[in-house]
Image (tube, rainbow, N blue to C red; front, side, top):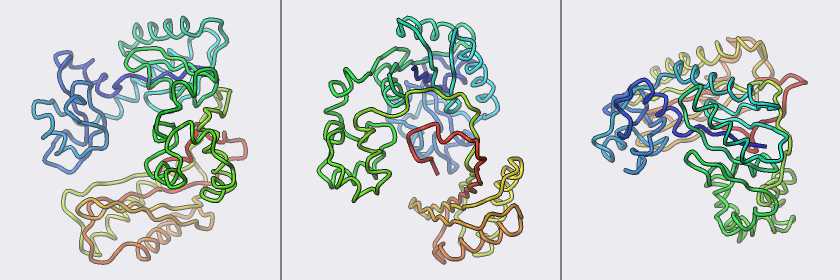
Length: 352
């Protein structure tokens, strides 16, 4: 199986329509105005050399790369480019394609020479879309995904059971797909700091720390094991989320409530298009200066907008700290899943 990851996708798409930007540091984020509160969506390799990265405040990115060209996000244009790439992948001989997002997908194939297949795929993507990609080859989805990082940019790299520990064993656990800073910190408390140590972890401490399902699952990640089939079943969204960064902090309770109502209306419009009831809510609050907290709550299954809105406002009333200035609000509504929905398309338990 292959993991195809487009190189600096959003920045590359922007350079295609502005060829004069080729070779220059390019930053995409917000409305393209570093004086506003916004974060970097992507940065070209030239911008990354200045220390600019995704999720960084746009104002800080502009200071790090003062000569960078800063552009606004154009989601519709990126979606169109992504669809062209995915169509190219689906046109590959014998390919089964599992889309992960705008800029990446798994491709299941049967071939005696996966490297040659990967090179042909890269060439087809380049010819049809003018975009470069990196391909990771693996005998599990996890290994293919991790392999991509070693091939960046524009390369091909293979990770299998034969070379997994040789390549990954001494690396920190945070280098694994599905292990972030919080989980790696908890693993470190168990004396597990490398991938090899995680692969050899005893079950009992893992279960005690992470529970009977996730404990063994993290150990499985350490061995690079997991799903071995690419599933092209159409992905069904588990939830919809929206968030807004406010140019001026919200402090007045009436302002906060109005912002929540507006946010909820947008999320509930997305949910209504799915035709499935809401079963859970997550409220994201970023307090000034930059402290982010999330609050979750299961709710009785409901498709009634007024009922869900009421539960959103109640969650906010219960959890938002009174009088504390707010610079960002986000809301996620989790929906009931159809019985025939695919269980998951990444080894993580889902983003916020």
